[in-house]
Amino acid sequence: SLFQEQFFLGCQQALETGGIIVTQNGVPFYQPEELVAAHKCRQKVFLYAGFYTAPVPLYAGGYMAFGWGSDVLDPSKISTEQLKERITKAGLKFKIYTSQGHISSFTPPPRILELLAEAEG
Figure (cartoon, helix red, strand yellow):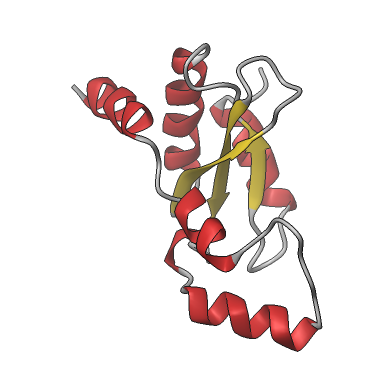
């Protein structure tokens, strides 16, 4: 029942205004059906829904998809300038994270785009 419409409806009700839910969504190359099914459910529930990807070296496949949903925020629309400003204001220093990497993680790889297009028919 995880990642089905009922699950996301419960999450939506639990979120405060402006909140966003993020869930792991498996390895796109090994679990394409799960990725597409969960995305369709998120889209039914939230005004904004999408994916971002990140390397997770210790997980089988090493490349994970994370699904997100929100009724207020679309994190894929933030600019590198906005991120840099937030990082500076918070006084954060990173060894791996960059604002450019953050933005690029919201650009799904071609295989995910293909899977979603195939599912839409």
